Amino acid sequence: MRRFLLVTFSLLAGCAAEPVPYHSGNEIPRGPGLLSGERGEFSLRMGSSAAPRDASEEKDYQEWREERKRRQETPAK
Amino acid sequence: MKTRLLLAFGAAALAANVQAQGIDLKLSGQINRALMRVDDGVENNWFNVDNANSSTRFRFNAEGDAGPGLRAGILWEMEYKSNASNAVTFPLRQVSPTLDERHMDVFVRGGFGTLRLGQGDGAANGASEVDLSGTTVAHYASTTDIGGAFQYRTAGVLSGASISGTISNQDFESRYDRLHYQSPSFSGFMAEVSLGHKATDIVEFALRYSGKLGALGTLGTLAGALGYSNADDPVIDIKTVGGSVSWLHDSGLNLTFAHTTRDLPGREGKFSYLKAGYKFGQHAVSIDYGMGDDQAAAGDEAKVYGIGYVFTPLAWAEIFALYKLHSIDRPGVSLEDINFFMVGSRIKF
Image (cartoon, rainbow over all chains, first blue to last red; front, side, top):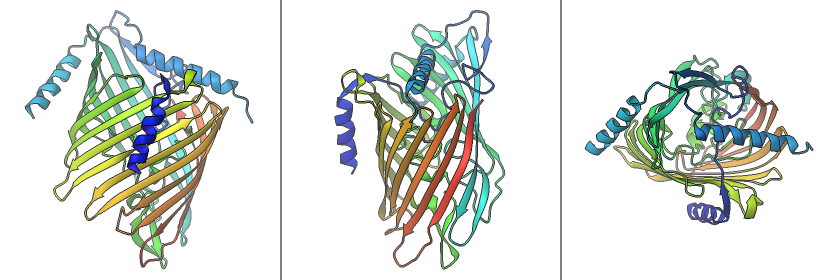
């Protein structure tokens, strides 16, 4: 069974075209929050020089928006 | 040990070196509550629970520049469960809430990957729980998160054989105080290793993958992980090996499979899990089947069948429902099935 999992995983991954980040559904969801709004987080900026938003976080947010758009475009059956 | 200490001090020094200029401190969290109906063949009742599939929790995190090509920060996440769905039983319908640690670590990341020091995920945590179905808040490979403390009955009395003891997904060593390294992503592949201590010394490895399949991603999305852990127990080194793979087609059809084995004194505990689902618009539905063999005792064959549904009416709100049936075959003993029905909501705040 272990070997089956290893082989299946390797074969399927071998067909890969483009990496996408995985977010576990058991963690705090990505996207908006009831109180925190569109960004989904209360943010307190410390210090005077405003650093740019972390690139990976911005990517996560954009991916969530695209996923939401795709889901809205999928017709309900 | 010296090397580990040096690495630990290095990470801490880098984190401390971060200037407090232009750093975002972020707070987020969720509340996840449900009503759960349980019938063990003799007793049945309703429970008002915190859904341990994804418990009520909050998180602080912050990250800032720590030098050329380096970022450092903190992650602090706690859970606060009142009447956890994996803790209540008929004799114990009310379980007081406790504030429990999930993550408390400092990290530094750069082109080399991410190095974490403190309490948090071991390298292989979740490697048997990769799932793209969209119904994990209702059910997933860790079926014991709902009703795990309930015991099967024999001739009307509690047998001592609990759901969590007989059909655990054996998801490696969870979270602990550790030093954790995660490689950068290479075409969707990532390697992880962690060294730490819980009740015993622990070492874990994992290989993870997540990506689109086929030319232009036409075959959907695939995610998976393979893990290995070794807990240096005084009686026996508890080795756990296994993983999971989940495929989501663009049509919404999805399939998930997980399998783990764990060395136990005199036997090998096994767990297998299958799930098939369909996602469409704001809805996701799935059925699953799990098997746990030889986990609490040699010869045990525990099974679970379930059906779950998740409706996401708003981006920050999910409503879920679950029905599942647990059963077990134990040589020489007749044990009653246990039925669960649960309905609830997770709200991100």
